[in-house]
Length: 210
Image (tube, rainbow, N blue to C red; front, side):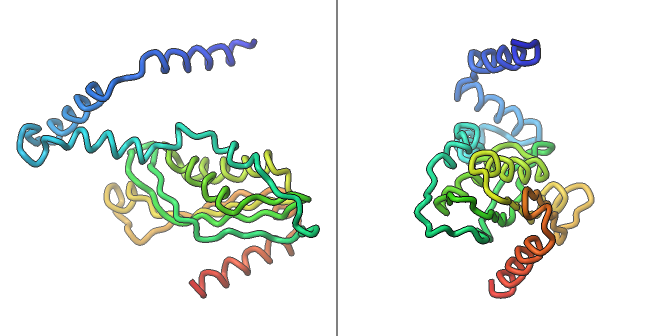
């Protein structure tokens, strides 16, 4: 085992053994409430720490999932279908790892099968599992695409995310109308301009009809 791997394993073991309790987490929330100048003992805030940690369990549920497990079940009885499969406009809710504020938008995921296809809902589950973590949009885009490419081995994968970042909308430069678009391409989508244009055309038609 190399030094890097050993350090990672030790870090995981340390994190596991030092897991904080609900009570400790709520004390941290109370500290933040006091930091902004509020009274943690007033009526409207008495249950806020508990509500916050419950919400965080939902916001960051992706840490409990292995997204690649959703890609283990595939189907091969598809009459040799080897053309474009696009799942568009998947609702996406994540949190910026720099400010821990939301970014929200849509994911468009496409692939070209090479003998096997995925259940469509599994694609949405992969998006959710990676999104429900502290993220940056660029990394999230790559993680979704790479997981599908590695596990399914299709002829091509494309992932396009279009999101609005609250850290840019309501703080800092305060540009609420701005959107950020990222893409990650593998296989035919990267190497074949005609295939790439077919995808972009389909997504353009979807946007107009949506």
